[in-house]
Image (cartoon, rainbow, N blue to C red; front, side, top):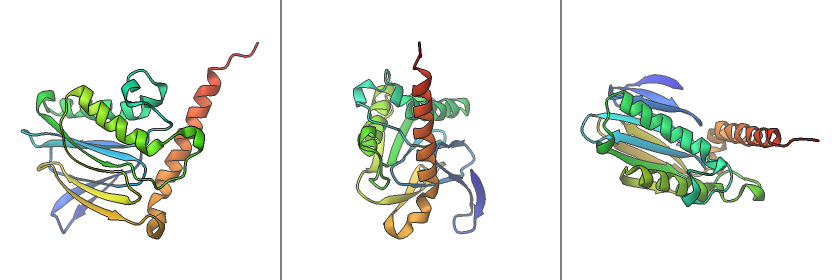
Length: 196
């Protein structure tokens, strides 16, 4: 996570990378760049507390199976951490709302991984539905990358779509994260094998 002060907005900015989350009640701007990953911004509609996560859900998962599937743990973990931190900062579950971004078809995945971007989108929607957190806006899918600025005190979002081919360096971190996640998943699966 990087932090800096924005002269343009006169606010502190926290930049999130893949696998990170952050919650603020001090009015920071949360910034991330998305490709296939999803960023979920959750905020308390009354208390000016907001947070964002940035996750990549590996493999195919049916949205109705997110609570039982081994594949759902990364997205599930990111969502649970974010909601838990919001509540710790004083947010109330009944006044939470969300905005969802990302899930562009910009990274290449193996066929055996299924449709990762579609799974990301379905996971985010289904999880929030099950938690009773209304989605106030979303911008997902397609073939573009996204830069997202989330103003935690107002829940305002500035979004910019861009061509991944022209900005491929922006996705180096996401590609690296994808490799780590898929490598860890294969390592976890190999531990389930018992040789006799």
